[in-house]
Length: 286
Image 1 (cartoon, rainbow, N blue to C red):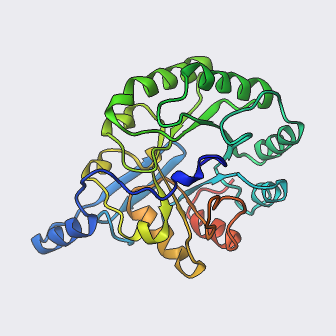
Image 2 (cartoon, rainbow, N blue to C red; image 1 turned 180 degrees about the horizontal axis):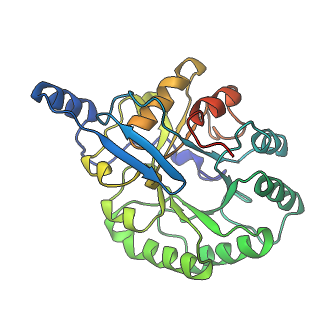
């Protein structure tokens, strides 16, 4: 999700998974009803119906904003009626850079004052970036911006890179106790990644692709707080459906935007106030 790596967005899943719509149809024929109880770290969000349906009224969704845009959009996000739960701080498109940026320090301070958790962006280049460089990002985000939770982008999701990500996650948690590690494979990864990341972004792509998303059955074994979905190129008329699908598919964190192109995150979506209100309608106030 970095400015330099956005060409990777929209890549399709490489895993053969059971189609959710087929699963729902089989269960319906069999007369079986499934209720999935979802909880997340910031409080219970209730019970949803069969995975793949949109009968999820009354559930709270936490918004996570890739803040790869101008300062004016930061102000719009932080001053929202219900500020997003998380914002991703991307300084250089790769990591924290070589020196603190005074403007970003101010933006981070304002976001924190609004109760937003900041995630420091660090690209892992599909497990090929040297560990020492990512660890340096971790230290610099904490020292320069007071940001201790880390968003690891370009995560391969493949079995052979598991030791690499285990090493990074262990370092982040040891260096910043209480921090969160987010992983972004952009697809449903090898299931073992779920024990590495506190939150895993298992979908990043267009709304058109999201409509046909196959969700593996093992998703039901985890709370919604483990999953994030980012959906771009979403028309305003389809916002409600996108949010509903995210709820039904067990995503505790979501971001929907009508942005397109090489950087669909260069601005907040044109319907941001509506998304903010709709997604957080059932969230605890205060």
